[in-house]
Amino acid sequence: MIGDKLPAPSYWPRAKRALARTDAVMKDIIAAHPRVRLRSRGDAFQTLARSIVGQQISVKAADSVWARVVEAAPTLRPEAFLALRKPRLLRAGLSRQKADYVRDLARHIVEGTLHVGRWPAMDDEAIIEELTAVRGIGRWTAEMFLIFNLMRPDVFPVDDLGLRRAVALHYRDGEPIGARELREFGAAWAPWRSVATWYLWRSLDPVPVEY
Image (tube, rainbow, N blue to C red; front, side):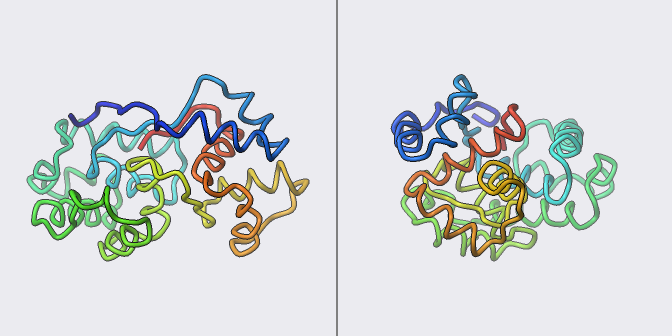
């Protein structure tokens, strides 16, 4: 049911142990956040729509806009978004571009051009390729979907600014790190890079974002 949270992924305890065993910094970050973990809301459209809403704005601003979007379409069904006139989405705080993106996403799901039912059996890159064919969904948004909806264990969003800030803070005395170097740096966390990323986010903001 939309809005319900699924249980934490079964691999979570195993991933925590593996990361803590091989990385002393990660061990301390994990220990500092013992009672929070990744959870999915379980609904593809809601996760993707919320990711679009959150693009290029702060978490606090995204939460505020999303709350008004929920008021406009309480069921959070793609059909409800298609039924809304664009001015109503604009009044909720969406930019014109984001309103178009969310409606286009809803249309893809309603028309079946996104194969939601097949995604659990598809590999990460195949899902990213399908999602990025939709207007407004780039690689970052697709990666957020893999982490927060499908709860894939080894996604590493090297373009995420929060991840870059956390790695710079904890591992490089504040020195910035680019995407290519970050990808190489994070290879040591495989096959649990989603989990490492999630804890690095928590080191900057202890309240989990739930797409």
